[in-house]
Image (cartoon, rainbow over all chains, first blue to last red; front, side, top):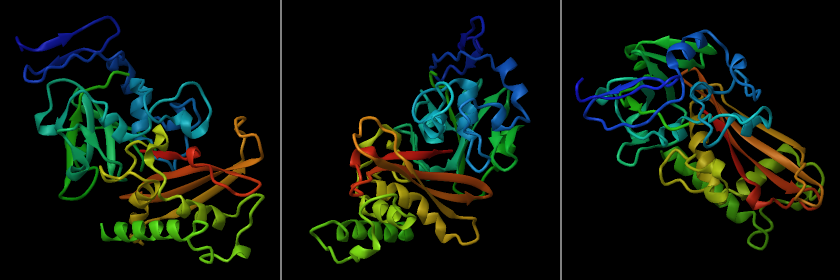
Length: 181
Length: 151
């Protein structure tokens, strides 16, 4: 850990990353206090833009409310209500990650977790296409917090359970370092 | 992939054949109104007629296709319509037309929303488009296209 890059500031989340992954992102969110209380909550308890229909997909929506991702297409663009709104698209968040890769190459520390077919991702260009079978969560302290669209609430699971979110031999888990909000 | 290709061909074909001056007999005129609130069927026709609108029309459409090379509204919609070949899934299309309120458009207009709703492994998804058409002649404003949906 002597060569690790560590950032710590008041109210910032702590990052300790592998020396193999140059990484200078800072996240203005204290995940240790912010994230766990979301477990069990429905999107109606999270979104002030009233984009709360359980028939819609809220995985990226949840992540963006936690992390404050206000880039790209937002919940407010769907409803016209609320304040600023946050991003609701998995592929747009993936495309904003400073570094992405296969989960087996994940740096030490907390990251975003993505799962989809490997053909839907181009790691060289750090881009993901828009397909139905794609999902996102926040890996914090070795647990992945994500919005279960089947249970209509936030859950936390191990990376091993998250890796089984979709069936299929082409399904892979990818990491993404946190975009700047 | 084949199904997606067929859908794209169909959308492109309809887009060409329904343009005035190319094949005006493709749809009998009496089936379509030329003013007033459009019917669901008329909205579907407008969607098909505008399949060739480029995704660069608006930032909401950036990267919404299921292939890195997708560049049109037709390819975007086909990206999701192709999953309707799974007849075991709960699929539907929803269409909504509301009175438009864009102050920049100096005449009565309508805002149409066309959404493709589906399920993958028990998870719901909804993707689609909205666009504006004039009340007086049902002219669709190309630049009004927006790509909707999340997940």
